[in-house]
Structure formats: C-alpha cells, structure tokens
Image (cartoon, rainbow over all chains, first blue to last red; front, side):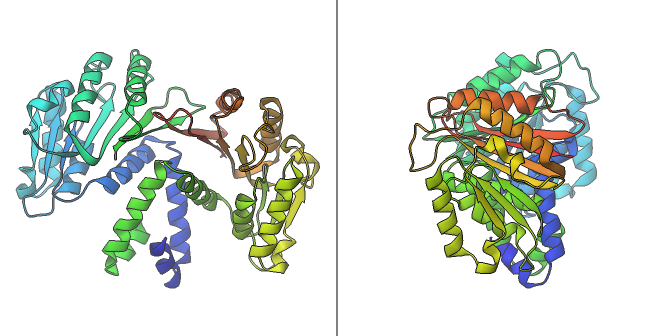
Length: 222
Length: 222
C-alpha cells in the first residue's frame, strides 16, 4: 500500500483513517447510495479512458453518466452504448447527460430503445468491450410491472460474455424484492456458476440478514 | 475521497491507479493471499489502538499477530485473547509472536488451549470486544481430521455476539472444501440470517464459480 505510506508520511493520519472507514462502510452495501458508490469504485478499477463500455439497462441514466465520465478524456475517444426497453428511461438518460456533460463528450454516448438481449446488434463487430453493467428489476420511479425477465437476461448475459475483452467485467446488480426478482436471481446465479474458473473470476456480495436487499455479481474475465 | 484528491494533487496519478487496481483484485478474493489482505484491511477499519479483540481460532498465529499490531500502541493498552483447541497451534502462534514483536508488546496477547465456544471464560466480564475473528475448518499443515464443528461454532458465535461492543465486527472465514465444511457453512449462514437488521449488518462474499473456495461473512454490530 505505497499510496497509504505516502499519505502517512505527509502526516495525514486523519484522512487515512477516514478513508479506511469509508471503504469499509461501502463494503457493507448497507444503503442504496453506498451500493452505487461501491459498484462505481469497482468499475473504476477496470475502465480506462478511451474504452468501450455498455450500460445494458440505462434506467434513469445515473450509471450511463458515470460510465461516460470514466471513458471520456476530452479527445473524442471512448464509447458508451446504452439501451433500455422503455422510451421514458432513455429520455431521462438523454436529459441527464445533456445537462451534466460538455457537448463535445455527449456524442460518445449512443442510446438505443432496445432490449438488453439485443446488445450485439448495436456494438460494432470486433469491438472489445471493457465493461457491461446491468441493473436488473424495474425502472425506479417507473411502472413496476415492466421488469427485466430471466430468459431475456440470460440472452443478454451470454451476449455480454461474447462481447467482453480480456480483463473486462460484467457487473450485475440483481434486485430480488419484487415479484419475479428471485427467479431472475436464480438465472444469474446459474449463469455465473457455469463460467469456467480458468477464464473467469465470478463473485457475489450479499446481505445475509436482509433477504430483500439487492445482490451484486461481478464476473471478471481474466 | 479527500485522500485521493490529495494524492492526485501531489501528482501521484500512478500510485493512485495502482491502488485502485489492488483494491479491486482484493475484492475478488481470488487467492489465499488476497483473501487475507482483504480481511485484514476490513479489520483495520474497525479496530483501534487500545481495543480488546479475540482470535477465536489461532491456527498458525498469522491473524493473532496482525491483530496484535492493530491494538498495540507501545503504551501497554490493548488486548488480544487467542485460543485454539490444538496445543501445536498455540505453540506456533506463541513462537511467531515472540519472533516478530517487541517483548513489551508480547504481554498484550493471552493464549488459551480452549475451544472457541468457551471464549466467555477468558475475556474479563464487562469488557467490550471490538472484533472476534474466526477461521473455520482445519489447521493449515496440521491434522485434517481435527476440524471446527457446527454445534461448537454456533455456541462460539453466540458468545461472540454477547461479548461484542457497538461498532464491533464478527469476521468469519468459512472453509467449505473439506468433509463437514458445508454443514458448518449452513450453520454460520443460519446464525447470520437471524440477527436483527436494526442492530446488525450481515454480509457475505462468495466465489460463485469456485464452489470449494472459502466464504467470508462479516457481521457488523451497529
């Protein structure tokens, strides 16, 4: 931990300690904000400027925006392919991005009104994708009867597996508290379990005493 | 992330990036070394100088030593209560500590040839314990037929629950690859699941595509 040693040398013991604390709280995934903070922190380990990434479920666009900031470096490199089956989700995403980002960077995002299982139709052939992010369940604040479905999600995960380059990550936050959520969780678990250990590191973070809390899967390609 | 901002200001972009990377790899818990690094990093978020901590399963003493370094501040404050049912484990632990630590600090460790279910007999009444660490299974390099058993482990977890002060942590690494490992995992899972969510944050880290890999439970008391 050379970075920490440097901090300590500089006499920033207090900052050092606070950062450990933040780190730890985040690991507990106790609140929505902490979960979002942790997943993005993990994405940042993987994604580099100029990369191509996919937001398989744009929702309200917060993750799409975060990904755009990770890949954009002001030189026009980097791509974010975002999709959602609901038009209202794409409109929210588009508005959020236009409000938050320099107009030159906006063009790095391509949004599509498509099911996540069709992601291979929009990512140009031969592109190595660094990260595919999924937020499964329903659109927050939207129609709760419109949910991602296990069968389509399995197709989408398989497409993500084919698109992903080496040292890439498939990140899946599975919401389990709504009707159909447990079935989708079982499908993701089955998909992750069968990926060969020589090529994939698949791990899962779960809250044990809050059965309705979302579960985070991280499928890392070696 | 004020600490990171400070680092960036100092032009240490490279260190900054490397640290993210390390962080991320550790989260994957892919190797024994990474698992150990991650668990200790989490302990460091919780344990402060002068605290009382318990190593419920000393094994070869590596964790006992790490805990001693976390609580000792050179002023004689801080205590580590270590126990193991096997005498050879205690001898290894004692040797390791004497070789690695200033003689003044050695007295902070109290080692007992006891089952982890008896930890309440050795921690003085009224002491608030900050951390109880478990490494379940068999002694690495020792007799693989001597293992921790679900019934005793449940007693030990219940004792740890009673001893733990607020903002304390029960950390449990459960090895599942040996005969009896799965039963012990089920017992720990059942124990963690029933802790009330208002008072406890219980989470679990698991490798999905390596069923024999150990599972980490973190039971944090609010």
